[in-house]
Image (tube, rainbow, N blue to C red; front, side):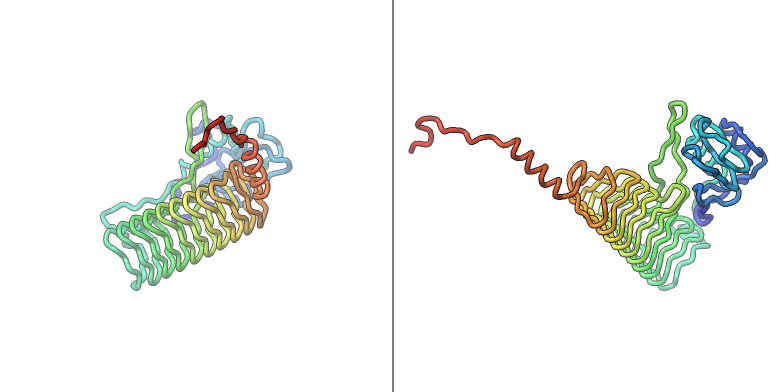
Length: 341
């Protein structure tokens, strides 16, 4: 899947040779190969720019252009062209910015003429609605809400005051509270010659039906794939969900929960307050995480974990009891005459 045209404009196409010249990469293969999109390796369409983190273990074929490090460029890659650079992640980021950009709402109109708003929807004063955005029947949009270009708001969904949504598709009967931010770029960085390059976030946020998102929570859009909140999720106030995260249906997060990028959360999982999840982990279906848990490894389905770093609850309780015993002091003997009336 490439960048969704509802949210991103294509400035190209450019060629592999153009990208090589403008990023300092070495082009191997056809310099005239066109590039006008980005994608993950498994879903790359024709003309897409693909980034590989390491050399493939077996033959890898892509219909577009591949970016890779010199020590990983091998004969196992079949593509129209290969861009080779010591900092491939940074090259990928700078190259993507040359032919893709996020759509912008400009002009004098708070509500763009091309926006489609159902006549039964309720729109409060000060709402901004971008081009080609859609607002469904009986939706309620609070004061000062900003809805970016192409955003879809389902029927009977409520958006609280001053919330901001971009690059998002929101289902029906959802409730997004005041100050929530949905669809901003996530925190992805690359390094090149001591400088920091921000990675592109060209995915979306998909929110299924009957999801609740609390006040001042943030849901980042995906980098190359989508951030997904399954049906019936309940996200409390002041939570953060990073890019590429998948939250299973009817999962629950209490306030201050923080989920790093590319985490997979199973259906029915329950997070206590101020739970923190490291990136690229899997939280199994029905797993329960006690308040303040710091999760550094996968949590199996149905288990309850606690602690920092988090571990199964029984282990955590045994460890806590042992520490309490070890830190305990023996009763102090009373001095002669102490305590006399």
